[in-house]
Each structure stands twice: as structure tokens, then as C-alpha cells.
Amino acid sequence: MSKQTNDPSRRRFLAIAAGATATLAAGSLLPRLAHAAQLPHLSPANPQAKALGFVENTAQVDQAKYPNHKPTQDCANCTFFQGAAGAAWGPCAIFKGFAVPARGWCTAHATRK
Ligand code: SF4
Image (cartoon, rainbow, N blue to C red; front, side, top):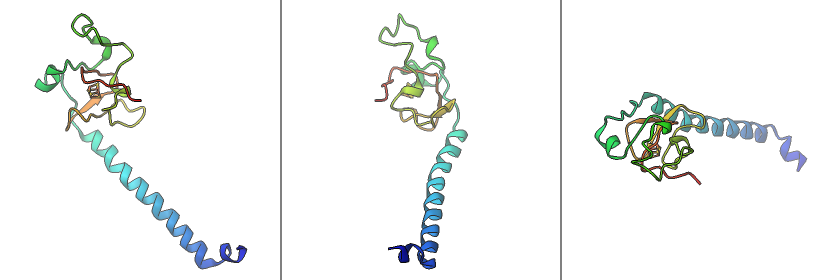
């Protein structure tokens, strides 16, 4: 067993495999983050956004119009939010091609489990 771990070719293989894994992980994450930064911000004036009562800040929701809204609901804790943890803006599976703010809200909100 110790003969295997001391084998220079085995150590070299493990080092290359570890490096390749790290490179693949970074390679799959970076395009997503770069993509999110390039997306235009969703405007509340967007027709689809209007139809779903989208606001840029959950504190702005008209509670009389949307009585099921809870102040704790926002894009950051919505299952459709695809931004990185702690990101101010991120992609949304409902509003494809746009970034939504972490503090935003719309009627499609579904609390992430
Ligand atoms: S679906 Fe969720 S993440 Fe997308 S805008 Fe509505 S509340 Fe925000």
C-alpha cells in the first residue's frame, strides 16, 4: 500500500487529476457568474414583469393588491432565483434573459426549500 502512494507516477497522476478537477469546477462556475453580470436588469415596466406584479424591493409590494405577500419573501429566497449566494442581482428562471434584484419580488415567488 505505501509502495503505491510513494510511486512518483501515481503521485503525479493524482496531482494532475486534482488540478483538472479544480479547473473544471472553476470553468463551469465562471461563465455562469460572468453571464449573470452581463444580463440587463429587469424593469418593473416590462410587460411580463407588470403582469406578475414585479417590484425591485419586496418592501414596495402593494399589500392590498397582493395580500398573500409576506415581507420575508424576496428573490434571494425564491426557488427561481439563480444568483450566487449574497449576490445583489441574479438570473431568474421566470424572467429569462434578465437579472432580478435579490430584494425583488413577484407573484411567482416560491420559497426555496
Ligand atoms: S420568480 Fe422569484 S426570483 Fe424571479 S422575480 Fe419572481 S420572486 Fe424574484
